Amino acid sequence: MFDPTFGVVFWVKLVMQTAVWAFIMISAILAFKLTESATWVGIVGAAVMLPQLGLALLSGRLSDQYGPVRQLVTGSFISGAASLALSLWFLFSDVGPDVGATALVVSSLIFGVGLALSSPAQQSIIPLLVSAEELPAAVGLNFVPMTLARTAGPALGAFAVNAWGPVPALLFAGSITLLVIPFFRLIQRRLVQGFTAAGDHRILSALKFVWTHKPVLVCLIGVAVIGAGSEAAVTLSPVVANSFGEPSSGGGVLTAAFGLGGLIGVVIHRMVERRGTAGLQGCLAMIILGAAVVVAPLGGTLSFAAGVLVLGGAGMVAGFTAFSIAVQLGSPPEMLGRVMALWTLAAAGFRPPAAVVLGLVADHFSTETALIGAGLFMVAAGIGICVALRYSRTKSEIPSR
Image 1 (cartoon, rainbow, N blue to C red):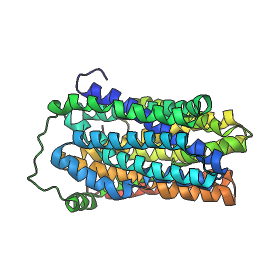
Image 2: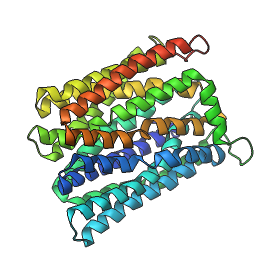
Image 3: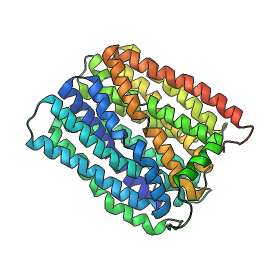
Image 4: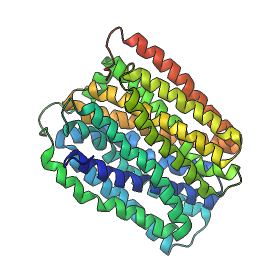
């Protein structure tokens, strides 16, 4: 955390991810206040992640070819500019709720373009800063900023909207995203691998590698299931709070509790990392996450749901960490950018349709139905992936720690 190389990435990522989650929560709260529709909340949440589908693999290829720093700088600039532009739009416009919600979708899409460009680099840069022996610990620590950001970011975003209003809140989130850019230049000279235009940088090569290495493929599927299923704790948080008779800003409490649980998940995974394979650890964590999402709405109070989501957040981050260690240890260094782009695509690319589906189910059936459905999906998938990993182990072992 305080290493002059890895530490810079650690703290900059913490600040940047906090701003990202603050923006996501601000957008969700504003969408619900403008429309009182869970579907619109889901659409706005999906818009942030949708660009991953088209740009993540391209970003990973560019990261392998030219290095991850360029992608980090470009992505951060685009995301920060989108938040600042939305704050100015709200400052000078006076339109109806539908137009305001549309502006949220557009700005979220642009913000998501920045995320799509920078997210693969945030993952692939870690193995380039540490030795092979340090990699497992570094990968585990790499999830701490994300976890802390999921705790602080939504709470900060909800507070900013309620205390300052949408314009200062969005201005704050965008400014933070832009201010971290100079710090990425500090690590440019410390990367342990050179980058040239020569060599095989084709996306197809990474796809062939993943397809032929079944344990890596199955772990990426596990990442996708966790990413899609955990969206229930983010997209529906303002709606869940409202269903308990709380203001929609209470969604920040639920998402913060989920993020706090993620920090606990980092510690738990560190304690059990040598027990069983990384794949098995990921499956168990996924089942815990699914069970927590099922139970969360059954208590009928915000405090009960927040307490249960702490357990769910622990399962989410422990699962992400376990599966990610397996993927990174099983991938060649010259292909890390593209493989981790697939990781990013798995983690975030399925969240847009999941967010829309969750919003539609919550609107047309109930919030409880949406959460229970997402939870049962993760439990069933965890069991299925565990079986698939045991079968694939006859041909290729998932690296254990």
